[in-house]
Image (cartoon, rainbow, N blue to C red):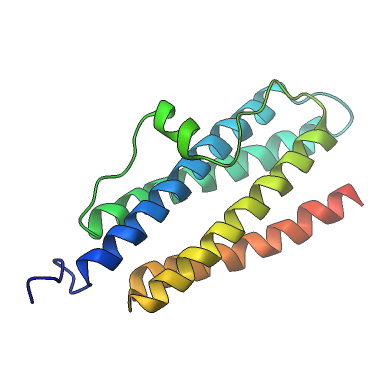
Length: 157
């Protein structure tokens, strides 16, 4: 019993999950800020369409950032909370000012690919740890993001 955390998961497995979730949190946070930049700086023919899509996207990312951080806390660990830690842990890199819509959408697709691969790793770890809460969260994110990949890819042609 003493090797279980407050929600009945093995402490060692929960620690590994929390570490991976912190990596996910870092990636989401950099992606969020990049998307804000796309929203603010987009120019050109598709401005109105992309300006709204990027706003929709960063609002969704903000919710996911909070959910992931709260999941880390639920597992009994501390979520990362500063950009120096995010920059260090994230595979997604900060975008320079991007005003070209097609380049921004391309960056969004690359970011989704990074997230989906990482979320699949977390899904496997959560399954091994019998962590249904993390499992459900990752399954939902993957399903939503796979559809968004299809939609943003269709936009690029």
